[in-house]
Image 1 (cartoon, one colour):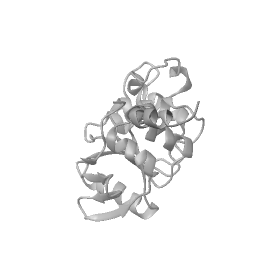
Image 2 (cartoon, one colour):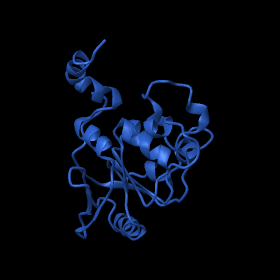
Image 3 (spheres, helix red, strand yellow):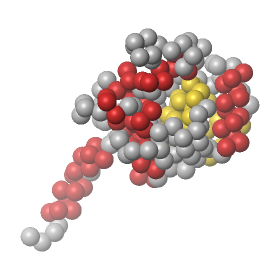
Image 4 (cartoon, rainbow, N blue to C red):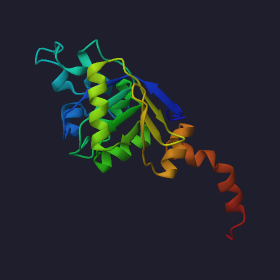
Length: 198
């Protein structure tokens, strides 16, 4: 299994109300040498999280003990810039299983779906409401229901539906990447191949 199955996630969240966050800010280019998915979480938002001396910046959200959870709430146009899949790896490796925004760059969005991070696109109005709720109470919870494709802000009960490709949805529900999906179908593929003329 490529990653944990995603069904219903209920969690508090880290708020990052910054628009146009690009992949170089998510994971700076100097950390792209590794080819495995492990270890990138340490350098997620590296230049925003740490000073040049390597000490944490206390005012950055990921260093703020008030916030916790498996959900990252970002501003509009999250994941723009270069197509590096390492950005999605860093988000996953840090421990996030869902990113919420009012708009995602397509390549980042697909890279997330390939590794088990659910990108949930909501309206700008709902995104604003989520940020306001977290600011009021950092422990406020959000429920992300993948089977029903619904996101709910627990404190207000407000919900919105979100879109997801049916193939990617099925893979996330099963914890499959593309290779796992094919492996799961290997008997069907074998049976089909045996009916084909040589």
